[in-house]
Image: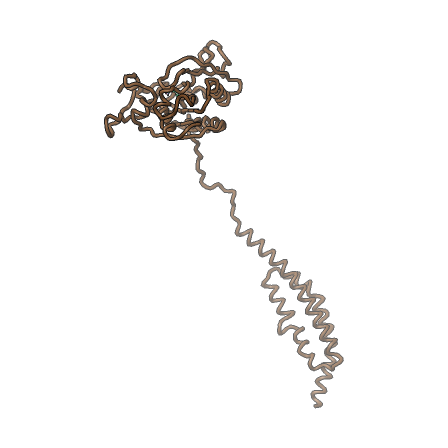
Amino acid sequence: MLALWFGRISVRLTSPIGMEELEAIAAGAPQRAASVTDLEELEALDSELLGKRSKLSELQRTIGTLPPDQKPVVGQAIQAARAAITAALDSRRAELRLVAANALLESDRVDVTLDARSFPLGAAHLIQQTIDEVCDIFVGLGYLVAEGPEAEIGWYNFDALNTPPTHPSRAESDTMYLEFGDPADEALLRTHTSPMQARWMERYDPPVHVVVPGKVYRADTIDASHLPVFHQIEGLAVDSGITFSDLKGTLAHFAREFFGSSTTVRLRPHFFPFTEPSAEMDVSCFACDGGQSGCRVCGGAGWLEMLGCGMVDPNVFEAVGYDPAAVTGFAFGMGVERLAMVRHDIHNIRHFIENDVRFLRQFP
Ligand code: PHE
């Protein structure tokens, strides 16, 4: 009993000293925290100041032995000191975490500016670019774009197009025939895109507004302006009341869009079996603006021959089951290589098939 009482006295006597020390520990905590340089050191400091063996905990354990009037005073002082120390440690902890996170970002850095292997990007071939551009112009006028078969039969390539069996273009020397199916069908590689006129009208009722790009084949020897395989774009418009001026207006619009807004056109009488009347259309030379002797593009003529066209022959309407008394229409066909050669000043058609990248790269 006495011993215990003495124990209390001794606690009572030491506790003010403990309190002073406590205040000093709390007051010094921010500085101690500031002096540690990594999180590991900080945790060591944390257990030194707040852990089970800290002065704080030591003092806390004596509370029970204090006289009742001292208990709350010491208790509150310990709470305040613990709060102050915790705050100092937490704010330093936040700082050190940020430093550690930045150090990790720095050490983990990937230099994304370093070139990976680069792949050269190609481009559509000039022929395809030209086809796309021409089709776009007609799509802007409400035309559809369609493609047809390159292997045809005589009916679509010739007969339905009012071309008699005796026509010279049907000769073996002009047309590449295929050994396929019934010889009476005259399987062949189409010599123009015009067979799609017949195929389209056979399938769909008027009104018709369609353009048909594609490959065509002729038994020609390769030279600077001929290839046995080349490209055409066919056009067909059929409705009630379509006139020759619609043909001219449409094609003049096309020429201005494709060759430039100051381009003019002229129509020269011509003959095609499937159009009547027929014409060839020339465009004014965009390089010399109409007749400068020795012009590199038109040679001084002032005009560039561009395409064939005409009003659809009534016999073609008959062949596809349209009533020639009810509808009229126009058709045209242009050579894609020729369009590109004229526009880009290309003097040899062979460039299109030689795959020389020095040529191809000029049309990115
Ligand atoms: N098919 C003709 C040719 O290849 C061009 C053409 C098409 C002419 C349509 C008139 C109408 O030369």
